[in-house]
Length: 141
Ligand SMILES: [Zn+2]
Image (cartoon, rainbow, N blue to C red; front, side, top):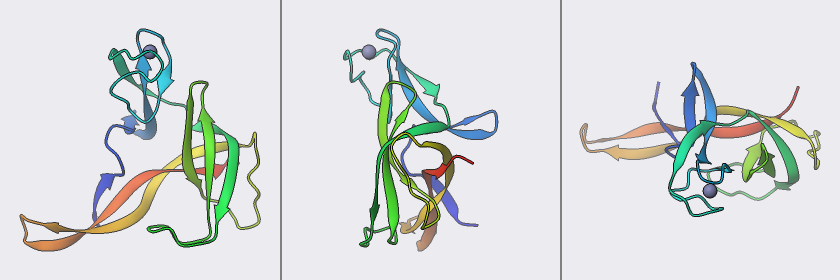
């Protein structure tokens, strides 16, 4: 098995053995943000704590790309989604070619390998392949 890393530190956490998206809750204005800012984007406070987010999102808009955008092979679908009330973010939707994604659709957050990368490991003086783990969305079943 390849070594693994998260696509970004601080946005995915382990809640009771299950991976979940992690946001930040502002203790001053009580709004949530994602991915992990240092300061609250609403009030500028630095009193932020990690919170696990719901694993369900609502689609604002989605678009399918038919040209190659490394590391993803076309066609792939991106959606701008809302998580809970305060968070708007973007992610890839994994779906059948004939499934349409529309405004208001509910999607489930999944975690897994997004792509592989090859890096030079100085300790073993050799290249190694790393599985990059991130999140994506699937239509709610
Ligand atoms: Zn705030």
